Length: 184
View 1: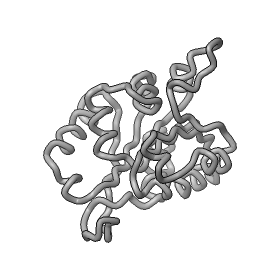
View 2: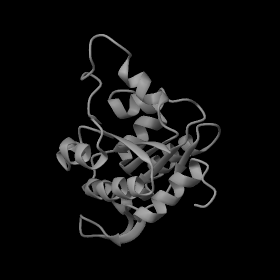
View 3: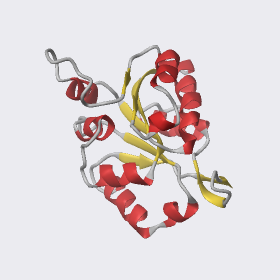
View 4: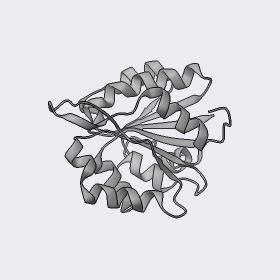
């Protein structure tokens, strides 16, 4: 299956490397988009090495001539996954912001292409009614967004609660279900 993995600026960004490797071992072709925030935690070189593909980092790093890269990229995958997905990324997607490569590509995707979100954030952020409303905007109706809820764990801030990135196996199963693999 063709998958675009979007990585946002969370302390859990390093776990996207494990997700990428697991997807590739399962035979999936994966391309990666890193937000500016993600690049504060992980590097494009890491993901280029692990994916064996160029990594998207900016709307502005496109050749002046040829296909419009973000539109071509938006049409390529069978499934999008955003892991980890921050509260900020959820809000931007819920309200149609297209101010970076990841949100632009997701907004320009084919309507039937599902987007799997694996949030990671502090418990109070996860439980915030604004975050919940934004998730509802994405998951209700025809938008084809699926949420893999975070798990309970000791969080980077020292709190214990729901907010840690879901286990990689759970995210992979959600991706395969969203993409139509029945054995997931």
